[in-house]
Image (cartoon, rainbow, N blue to C red; front, side, top):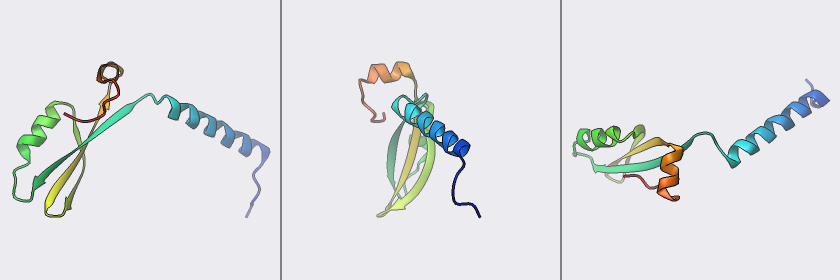
Length: 91
C-alpha cells in the first residue's frame, strides 16, 4: 500500500481543488428550496401540483412532529436571480 502521492497526483489534486474553488465562487447552476408542511390527513396533490406548475420538484418527504414536510427545489435562471434581488424564498 502506498501512502505518498506522486508529484503528478498532487498536481492533479491541486487542479481539481482550484476548479472547485472557482465553481463555488460562481456556480453555473443555482437552486432555491422551499418546504411545504401539511397535516398527516391533509391532501397533498393540490398544493404539490401548484408548486410543480411553478417549476418546483419534490426532493424529499419526511414526517416531523405530526405533520408531513415536503422538501422541494427548483433551478434559478440567471434572469430570475437578477429579478429577485437576492431573495431565495419560494412562492
